[in-house]
Amino acid sequence: EPEVTQTPSHQVTQMGQEVILRCVPISNHLYFYWYRQILGQKVEFLVSFYNNEISEKSEIFDDQFSVERPDGSNFTLKIRSTKLEDSAMYFCASSFNTGEAFFGQGTRLTVV
Amino acid sequence: QKEVEQNSGPLSVPEGAIASLNCTYSDRGSQSFFWYRQYSGKSPELIMSIYSNGDKEDGRFTAQLNKASQYVSLLIRDSQPSDSATYLCAGGGPTGTASKLTFGTGTRLQVTL
Image (cartoon, rainbow over all chains, first blue to last red; front, side, top):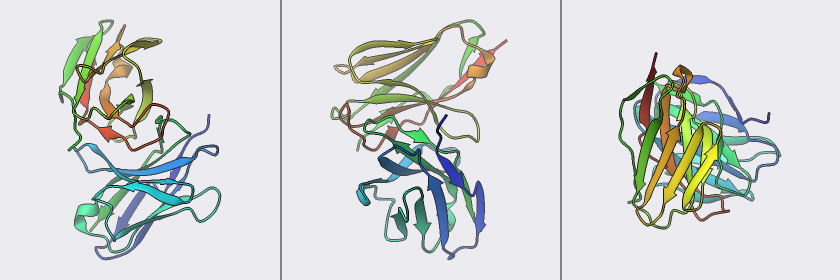
């Protein structure tokens, strides 16, 4: 069964460093998303991406964040200068043309 | 502020019983609703979607939507210990469109032997 895959599963980084989280969405899906979940809190929307551009972003998604689809399969989230409060699980999701979004297994980002 | 509200639980039900999970939403622009299951430390797993008023059944799961009351529910029949997880309610955009999901905090379900 097709699935969204994310790498790495766990990333530890020092405050101020750049990180890139990678995702391979389901192959025939058209919409791609990043969500995050801080430990013990709700899943929060960060950004959606369609037709090679951002379609919507939340107020969390500030200038420190960027997304890219560098080729036909990968979808990346870059955090330019990580802060302690960026520590969270980051989930990539994809959907076809409905709202049914399928999530990857997540990347646990720990900023020290 | 668009909100999706859920009772955090835990909701404890004996094995074989019906578990009833509820969710309310504030944004009348939300037209599509989803239930996700999330095991501890894992990612959300889509189990049901519902777009129209009424009931939608899939196996042991029934989703119910009442747009007038801004209320969504999920019934799990014949609850199994493997159903023990956090159930997330999420609201989306217009039916047939892909848009961001607004999640509730989730209800933790415990199915006891």
